[in-house]
Length: 121
Image (cartoon, rainbow, N blue to C red; front, side, top):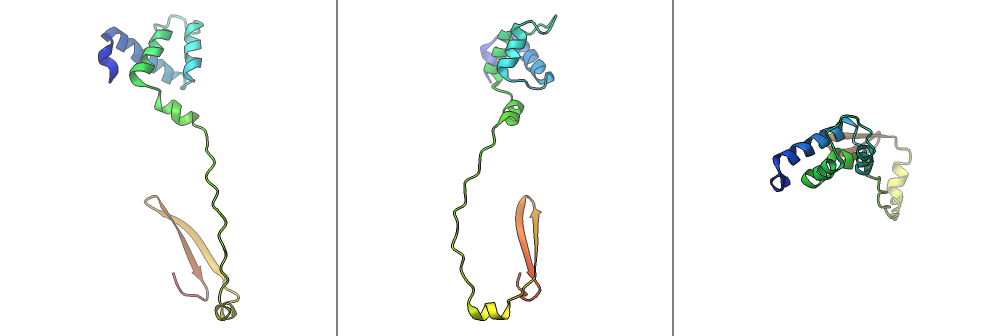
C-alpha cells in the first residue's frame, strides 16, 4: 500500500477520516469534503486534507462504489427464426400440457420442462 509514503501521524489521521466516512453512511467523496470544510462537525480532528490523503492511500471506498453504480441495460437478444414442427409430430401432439420450473444449483440456473405426452427430460 501507499502508507509508506506518509508519516505515521498522517496515516493515523487518514484512517480516522476513513472511519468517519463509514460512520456517516458513505456519502459521496465531494459531499464528505464539503461537510469537513464547512465545519459541520464540531471538535472533529478530521480535516479535508485527511480525507484526501485517505483517498490517495486506500483508494475509493468499495461500499461507496458498489452502492452508487449505475444500472446498465442488458444487450438485446436478436429475434430468432421459429421452426415449425413437422406435420406428423404436430398431428400426434396437438394438445400438450407443459409443467415449467426454474431451479438453481450452486448458482447455476436451469429450466426443467415436463409434458403429459412427450416423456423426455
